[in-house]
Length: 257
Image 1 (tube, one colour):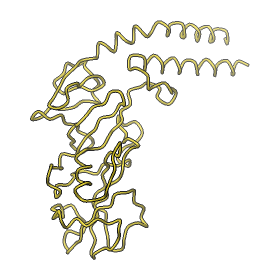
Image 2 (cartoon, helix red, strand yellow):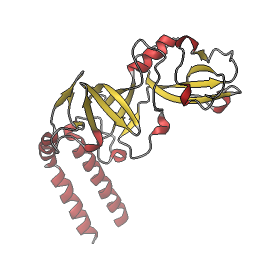
Image 3 (cartoon, helix red, strand yellow):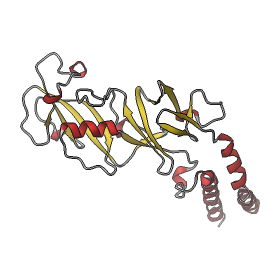
Image 4 (tube, helix red, strand yellow):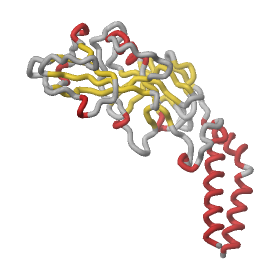
């Protein structure tokens, strides 16, 4: 029985040696190219809604509206500012933000807590939290940046909207102990810190939010078993399946002994 399993395993590995060309041809079948606005190359794994059915993957579908590329993520809508196929990141900006208007705020929360196992995206590790906070009394703390100069206009989203409030923004990951008395966190979003120096002024924070946040995508089968997923796209599936079968053969070998 063990001999048969080993033979089948080695036969599978031999067949996998023939897969690169097949995988490449199969992937090329999906390598459609589209464009929308400032995104000139929308290709695998992404697709536009109007692309042919065999283009890209549905879970990475984007929309093109008014010459802007849109990502629908959970209940939020985001402008796509960049797709980096080398780093495997897509940089997005909340549609509620407006240039040269610091009173415009994100419409949806976007933090690590918004993602779970199996989601097609993850927040990049190069991400900082921005906390929008309402307080019943003025706060004297270097962490709390007063938003009064921006005349915050989103009090309808605040749990304290029925009373006089003071609005602040805090740029950091906040624990419960960091929250001052009488204060409530209204919204938490992330922005990319990649190559960015933050000076913690209101204009700078707003510009960082307008720059956006990087989301990483995962399109590699057997991700947990495959440390080689950073290789060229054409060989990812081959490398991952190859690694998976090698692990299976090793397990069979030790069980047989």
